[in-house]
Amino acid sequence: MSQKTMEVVKNLDIKRYMGRWYEIASFPSRFQPRNGVNTRATYTLNEDGTVHVLNETFTDGKRGFIEGTAYEADPQSDEAKLKPSRNYLWVLCRQTHMDDEIYNQLVQKAKDEGYDVSKLHKTHKAILHLKEMTLPRTPKAFGGSNPF
Image (cartoon, rainbow, N blue to C red; front, side):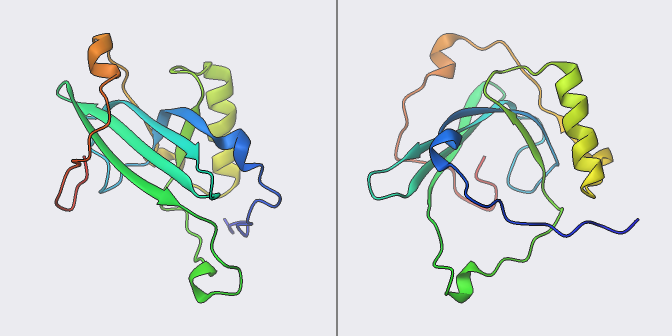
């Protein structure tokens, strides 16, 4: 099967992307633990136009996180030249759960776009105490090659 050419989203409304997103499914990756639950990402638009990124997951009841800043690359810069791949895929939702019909439609869309959806794993949800889910951010993150 020949793969479609990947295209950059034109005229992205970055403000609509801001806020909290819950991971419904993803491809396994070296930078996310396989046994993480309640994985989520929070994006906040800064005054200077950059985006604060906070990725969190819970493993064995402990919160793991990594923070960073995203910014728009200069289109004239070599840094802005990307090499798209289908090595990563996330299904995100504004709510902690997604209707199965919508999920299946998204998986089919990913398949149609050339992704190997057999690698897609649903993210586990667990009931955690409210205290565990709302821990304040701290300046200390995890070291080593695996941030979680």
